[in-house]
Image (tube, rainbow, N blue to C red):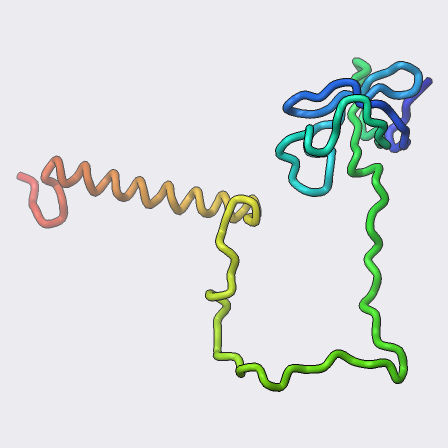
Length: 158
């Protein structure tokens, strides 16, 4: 049986590792589902999503010349359709507005931000944070070495 990239098949989970799961496909071939292709949400433990001998629907996302088969469970799942916002029908009830809430104070958005964690930061934000931390540490290191040598701005070298 020739596997084509993009085909969706059913297979049986035959092995689970820290980095993915092995799935036996029809025809006796085995492919691997990487941990990043198991679910649309973050997967910390594969065993929370899959167990041995589970039957899963997978999509073939790659086949190497050596015969290694890359599979995806999340790409095989139907994508949720984005429906437009539904308006109330003519004569239908609209949600009541709360006229008794306190008026908003002027805010620049700093109070409402979520705490910054690596889960909700983009790659660029993480790089920017790393660079800023690195620059701060380097300036502290330079300042402390200058103080030890006596070459801080308050002293003159002879």
